[in-house]
Amino acid sequence: MSKIIISCAITGSIHVPSQSPHLPFTPQDIAASAVGAAQAGAAILHLHARHPDTGRPSADPAHWAAFLPVIAAGCDAVINMTTGGSAIMTLDQRLAAPKANAPEMCSLNMGSMNFALYPMLARIKQFRFDWEQAFLENSDDVVFKNTPRDIAHVLDQMGTQRGARFEFECYDIGHLTMLKHFVDRGLIQTPIFIQFVFGVLGGMAPEPDTLTLLKRTADRLFGDSYQFSVLAAGRSQIPMATMAAAMGGHVRVGLEDNLYIAKGRLAESNAQQVTLIREIVERLGREVASPDEARAILHLKGRDKVGF
Image (cartoon, rainbow, N blue to C red; front, top):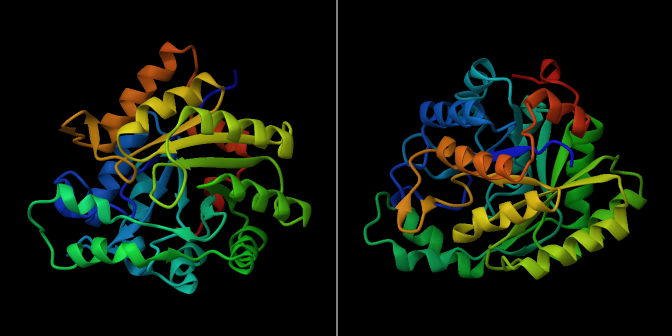
């Protein structure tokens, strides 16, 4: 098997600060947590921004600018900026910071979908900030919008014009069909890096049979011209990542996807999750890729060609 790329999603836009005191949202904490994850073995850092005073998901380029250069100075990991942002942001808002910073990688959701977070409410006894409860409650009426026109726009703005490669986030099997559509249109170049996403209410449940179906489908559609990785939200994070590693794929962990390190025990850092999955994949006989090896595997433009 080829070397395995560990991605770490540092903070995301799903969890609210009241769920864990260890979820980073200030620029200092996001930067320190990201560098720590890289030192633990993460070759790719998947990043979102948050408002430094409230922890609310943010698209403000100024909030990004407060931590991107610090991370870049502190480690050589690939910085992967979200173009998904939050389901309540417009496409222009989601693209403002990536366009300004021209990273090596961006995430790209391959379709529109329900994005329901409200089940988290049952596990929160007290809210730290006044925006959190309404944010979760109203997610029963939220659609994350990424139409074919939106996808083509992101591919042009971030790929064609700025040279980024993509983490294609596929929350359902139909997203693979959409990905093939854009390959056939000539708008996506190989190798393709697919992130199979499990556990978000509105997308696929974290089931082993579904992962094997996705792998067979991707093999049929893309042959040997793709790499795949797996992320699973919540308690299935490590089991599904372990299965992906055993199948020859890559893995993603991080506090964006799961706040825990074990049942009933909050993870104290992103590095803690990276250390755990690194130990598991190495015991499976996989060798962890360095950031430069990840760049070579995914044909990235290089850290000297970014805008931060």
